[in-house]
Length: 77
Image (cartoon, rainbow, N blue to C red; front, side, top):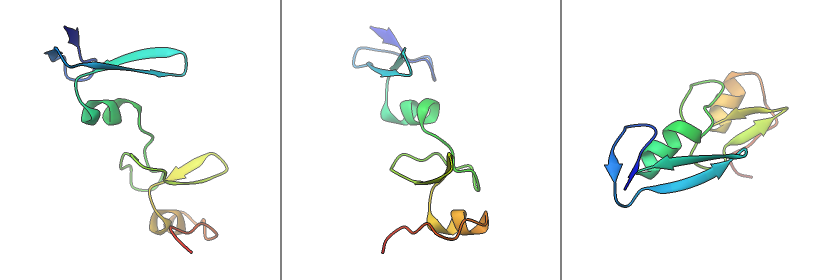
């Protein structure tokens, strides 16, 4: 069995994710998202989807981007 690096659970269905040259072990997608997903620059929520990005700054949605003064991004056309 493998131990999740976030919660410490020793789980027979753990999985590994390779990112940035490192291998990470998790017992759930929730723990993987907590450890690896970027956070919105405005509200801090973890971004599990595509998000929006401008000049290396990532936002969870158009609303947060607009609140940060970035007006040209859109969730949808």
